[in-house]
Image (cartoon, rainbow, N blue to C red; front, side):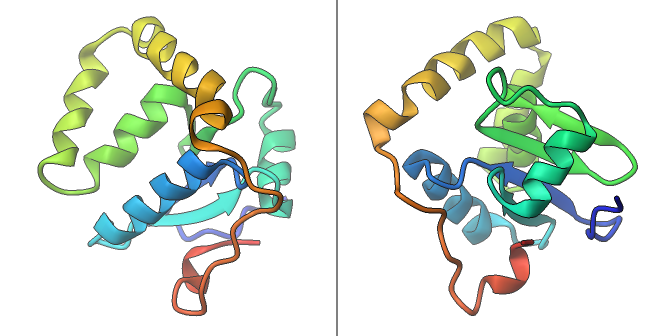
Length: 139
């Protein structure tokens, strides 16, 4: 199955029912001045296809993935920091944390991910993008 994303774009897979994830996607859209990113919920058809194709255990990785055509998938804090790198100053400075070993970064990431529904809430259904944003989302 070919993933329908241009080679010059990166696909962010996010938890479509998570309020924190939804807010993060809105932030990324607002600050993605170079139009680098496309989006799909983990629960969407394309999200499930990528999860299946790459044998991702959603019990271990269930909040954010960064899929780059011809390069593969980044998970957890690595995905978040690589996304931040493309968002302009000052948020792009967060990418400096990539020098911190992943097991340390992911410990913090996992703590936040584990508590995100309790702290930020959960929706009944995935976000429906506005007509203006529809082109940034893959089904």
